[in-house]
Length: 348
Image 1 (tube, rainbow, N blue to C red):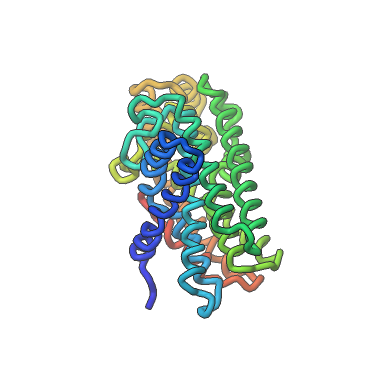
Image 2 (image 1 turned 90 degrees about the vertical axis):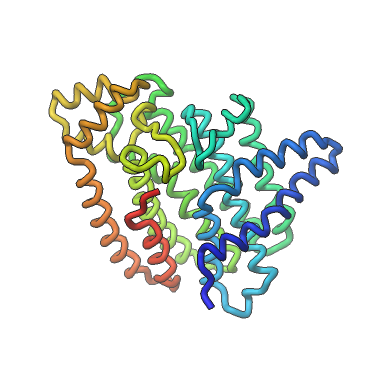
């Protein structure tokens, strides 16, 4: 009987308290109970409350790749633990990203750096989350054949994501007025590839493949190529939803315009803008002022960007379906069709 995502989520959640205990016990062994108590708070506040798209994807992909006789309780538990490592990694990145963007809300609650006025001290908590992730990896996977590949997969994803974040911060001119001349489609594609696509799609699927014992390099190459394409669609959707989505659904506040982010909307707007419209963007984009943000949104509407986005999403979805059908390395096409279907016309 097929397990629903909600049931998969509940089973994944059942493993979480054991991992929190693993991490806090490590602090207790070192005789620092205050740190153990603090780490428990950091973990519970930042890790388990998201949609867990990445972690759940890893579990589902793993189950689709291994023969039924290998789907033992122990092996499924390992996949769930690995899924939590992905979620801890994301929490680490989000805590730091929210500080850098001075964001207010994440997942329907104040960002961690705003919790009890923690402020920039939250940087240490973010890095603690990363270290906790590697601790769990070592505790549960050391000695297993996949261990080295898994550690390298996480290291590679973090390295590329941080480089993407560097490119993103450079694009915003480090919270100063952005240089809109830099906002090209090539630059946007690089930001998306490194900041989002690798850790959102490449990491969980490649990790699941390693855990499943896959060795064929061509399988990894073809998987990564299509996953980066799906990741690009995912980020363009995020760019659209930040501006035109419902914050009550997404659980986070819209900041891309005020922060001067290099997004799909601003890049397309700059391609279409008249000299007069570009002047409005030069004056208003990347400025923390409600009226100027409203003017930019109005200009996006004047340039018909919502309809352009829906057309882009539909065309990209159809193109990706064709690309998936062309995968010839032996990986099941259904794996990628399922990933694509989950984000098609998403609203959060």
